[in-house]
Length: 428
Image 1 (tube, one colour):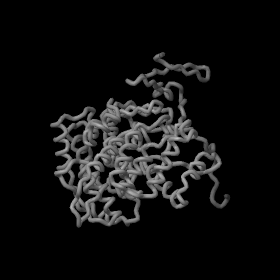
Image 2 (tube, helix red, strand yellow):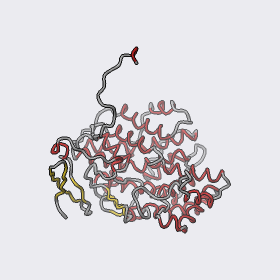
Image 3 (cartoon, helix red, strand yellow):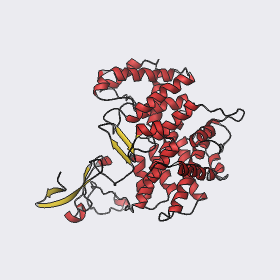
Image 4 (cartoon, helix red, strand yellow):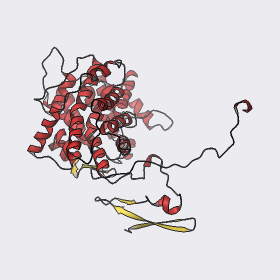
């Protein structure tokens, strides 16, 4: 392949280098385009054809259904690693050995205390507040209790900031849920594993002893791993662009949470359950809604099927489908909503319309099913997504700062009014 791309415009010729990634991806490097051409830019709404950075964290091939973190397949990581190992891998580039993992976990436990005054901020929210709004606000509020900015040139400072947010964020997630449910706040138990402690903080009732369910913990661990990073998606790009202004880690993460909130991104798993509830309220006729989904004139959208990036089966969905089946079977839950979900899944996997278009159930479809089975309120689904995505956001922010990337500043094509004289108020 040529190592240069040539652009012919307005009688002139411009050459730009073509860079190649380690997975044989190619990109035209146009960072000198505007300067070289006297103002010419490209326009790419949604940045679907524009690479914002070079990154060594996550590789994604949507056509082949491949997802890898730092070179490790998502299938291997979901089966053989735990979430804390994946956190370390994403952030620091390599899987930890026994000593590194033990120190990492110990350091996180040391930093798990959240200032008591944070409870006052939480108390200011009504129970009706959406948990994502609460979580974003609490994450941003951490800045007030940790005001010093991170010295990115100091490995020690960077490590301390990372450990601090990995320690405190699960507490904020648990508090957000317990506020929603009217339960007393819980700090968890430092004798437990990272994910097990998260589960305890969220679900332990004040009048009952906490009982661990290995299958539930394993499913939750897998869900967090599957959501840990996904290349330059909306929220990750937001974290990087906010961080490019040299905003701190906590502020950048808070911005990422807000970006994740949207129904086209992290809110998709909530939208799946809301769709299932609407079908159940309408007599649970799945065939009727499958027909509506195939009708181009019908505004109904089948949520949780297909993916903007994956043009084949979502590799994460393959993994979590098995966990969903196991959790539902183990807990013995009888829930008409979950029955509808299974019915839609079966019909979509057998219907030529969906199979031909590769509209398979995606990770949002199955994650919503598991979260509901675990007793997590629908409004909390995106919060759980944020909990899983936390190490990916941290890794991307760290990489961006260490690489010294310039501040993000997209261009535009102006299509408004030309210069016109001002008309005074009494003459309009």
